[in-house]
Amino acid sequence: MLFQARDSNSECRTSFFSLLVCLCSCLAASTFGQSPPTPPVNIQTAKPESEKAKAAGTKPAEPPAVLQQLNLAIEQLTARISPAVVQILVTGYGAQQENSHSQTAYVTREHAIGSGVIVDSEGYIMTNAHVVEGAQNIHVALPMPSVDYPDQIAPAGKQRIVEARLIGVHKDTDLALIKIDQTGLPTLSLGSRRPVHQGELVFAMGSPEGLENSVTMGVVSSVARQADPNRPLVYIQTDAPINPGNSGGPLVDTDGYVIGINTFILSQAGGSEGLGFAIPARVVQFVYQSLRKYGHVHRIEIKAGAQTITEDLAKGLGLAQTWGVVIDDVIPGGPADGAGLKIGDIVVRADGRPIGTLPAFTALLYLHPLDEVLKLEVLRGTEPKTLFIPVLEMKDSMDALSDLNVSRDNLVARLGILALDMNDQLQSMIGTLRISSGVVVVARVADFRSSANGLETGDVIHRVNQTPVDSLNSLREALRLIKPHDSAVLQVERDGGLQWMPFEME
Image 1 (tube, one colour):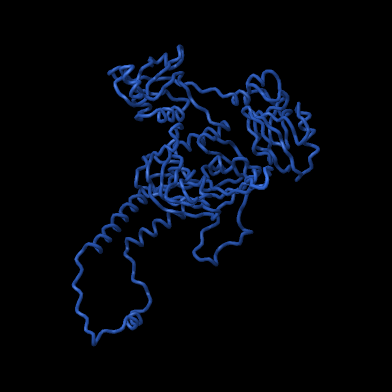
Image 2: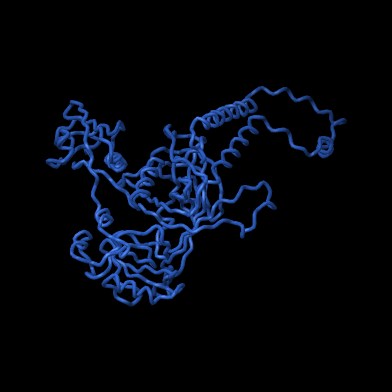
């Protein structure tokens, strides 16, 4: 596996820094230094420029050694990164854009291209959730060896394209985990032990506009940019050119570590304008571990609430500061109450990180490990206090479904799922349903391939094509009547909404 040992890369980072310093020095010397006086030109003996060029030949001047070294270092780093960056090919269905001549909605087959990064040699790949959203089929194009000349490009038929299956999606962070049946793959490491700094050199890799295995270079414009004030997630901003198709690809530092997953751009014209954003590696690592272990993301809670401090709030309550985060609720008997947290405490730090906004506090709780105590530093009046709060796992109804007693008898092989007939217990877990009858998806089965990739735990299947479904037997019978490669449409209820899920039966 690549990039597992940090020590071996420290010289690479030092050389980058040294080369850039030398380069700047050379440029400064050539620009601002004293040049020798130009001798007067003898008009009688001066030769035409064309004759001078002929005499000198066409060979370019030897570039400075510092440029050669910088160029070689970038080439070597790119060669080490690119084998672990893949192109993701997605086929799905979507609504065709309406025009002024008709209000009829058409559903058409769509193709999309994104990028991904191999994070485990056993075939696990992280990408963006929006890359695989609504996918009926997911394929991964493994990178071809780089070439030095156009005539060395391998024929398209030799490109390795393999089928992938969806392991889990987390829409809140726009991340997804997919897997291919390959082993011994090159990988990239998620994050390094040092912090990301504004101005540091970074590289973006992916398939912009479908151009596979493209690399661009830039700097970190900001280490923490909050795109939506109502969401806790912050992004790394970069001016490295990123375009549609780069989504899901890595943003890599000069050590070869992934510092973020490229996710979106701000653009007036639809192309790169130097405003690209990447999900920080710390978030990617947390989501990856949860999706791989559970299929969805687990979160913690401390049984307390908080809100943003405003000037009016601070004056009315007599708080010590007019900004930050204040505890507005502590549930009796909960872990926060047991640790001594009080209503009116101002949160100063959590796990050693400064807390200045509610999104920052929410994000820290979101990423806090389940097996660690939360260290909370608060200001009570003017007195600082340090509290250690045991955390609880935030219960998810989907976890409860996965824990139900199911067996091979609950397998629906053609959909690659485990499912149960609807009953009172299940309905109490899921909540109020629009249609009371149906079959509940309990889990996806990794060993079974299915074109119905969009099914999630907790989905309720009500129909197959025009046939109502009220039991596992009726679901299997309806699926049995559909021949391979024929169209199939599931009517699914999810989060209180009905939707059609079309796919081609395998």
